[in-house]
Image (cartoon, rainbow, N blue to C red; front, side, top):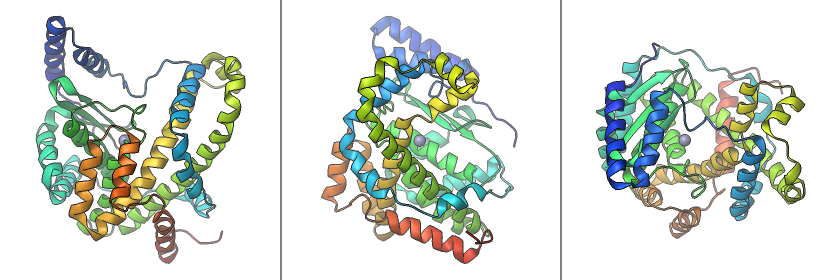
Length: 357
Ligand SMILES: [Zn+2]
């Protein structure tokens, strides 16, 4: 698929207007948006481009992790041994005939089927797709500029089933950011991947209905997800044990340069290590465990599940989100084992690879 860019002329106009408004009001909301829009114009992916050194990054990680210690127990309970870890590296997705038209057709169909306020905000974002949606080969992301109530979406494309999930995921961020009117902040809400991941799981079933013959690809996607959270859970548990010692060694944690020297890695490689930082794994693992429960709830009562999702999207803190889940009798880890087993079973029945492990 051809790379497709967003509308740079519009981007420049939005930047100018934010700068004018900042001069007038000195409000930081404009300053943050100026920074984000400038990064987009420079082709920098602000979300992933951190120049912090390794020590700083690790210190930040530890500080955030310390705030969320109570939530680690959920991950520890999910820390199960599984044959997925062995299958996982052998999974390759088929190449599909994805065009922008087919991808966006599914996307629009999906959110309109979801309906309600989600469809409303989706359609209002989607109608600007010629200006605000781009495709390419890098990792997917979306960015929200609250002062102009506008999102830019970049969807990573590799010609596999993942193209559909990437789009659903990033639009879920765009829609929820616009619904609650604030930019994303991991420090305040470690569960903010919950809604995009829940929509991904719902979309998996919709893809099977929408396209004939994609069920095997969807099974692979579920297996990869299971393996990823199990692996991430392991790392989170290891890191939890590490935090206990971290305070003693913090002054001696190496800088990025030391790190590159020790590991003989390139800057690109070192950045990749940072991107896979602990806190990111914690965010995705914990959010995924909640997403699994919301997904099962959705299967029995879609309307109520969407209302709960709407409510948790308005909440700032994971405590509030967990409380809302509890009020609705949704318990983390109630279905995670079933989810793993169901995916494993379909995989086994389909014999997608010779089952010799
Ligand atoms: Zn996300």
